[in-house]
Image (tube, rainbow, N blue to C red):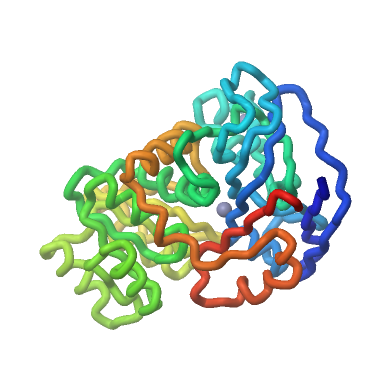
Length: 344
Ligand SMILES: [Zn+2]
Ligand SMILES: [Zn+2]
């Protein structure tokens, strides 16, 4: 079988390695065949040379829909042919975060496909306990679980109640995954973005009718109006924009919560009297926990999360070196899905 591997050699430069050797399979690992690879902001940043702490060359691919070839560790309960999502957060298992059930923020965390070589190849070895199987999900759906996990974990952090007024700032892929899980929790969800096209996507694809144009001079009044005169008690900022995140401190109602899903490289400041007067709770949200992966698989299986709006672009693994630039530059990009044909 040909072993076509695609490696990001340097910013802007993917190369095809046609005869890469099959991976070694260490103890505790399963060997899996990669069927789908989702492309996300991290991959685009790596491609553009803008991902901090990133080393080249690197085999990208951390959003994976895979099939078990060699189950490895029997304790993981996998069998040959199982279809799985991959939890790409490789954690140490010993640090303070791991011991307390938070491997998503392990002090030694390495993300498969970012800090170690990932899934842009037909076969990969992954720790067996990082595989989350489903009998019914498609490979496309399994590859979307990691992206959905970013939003699902953020929503778990804030624990919205049914009917609670929630504002999601930023309607890119991370914001949209927050929106879907906040909707599934029964919250009254409003979305704010500067892009009319993204807001229209929320209206058409996610049936959101509480929309706020962030660049409009009356945006603050509009947020209050959508809440019946009261501000949102949970605000998610998924912009990764320092100005938006700084402004977000003033948006939650008294007693409310603010969740930073996106991040910036630098400092954020806030006004302490404003923060104290409303007794805000501020959360960071990073990656997702293993329980979240299992919950997302179950939610898609049960039809509580609709994956149909997500995939906007498709390409094959062999197309990546020639086609990636056009995909990366397309403003309508939400999720590009790379498929790996059986013969390479
Ligand atoms: Zn991702
Ligand atoms: Zn750890």
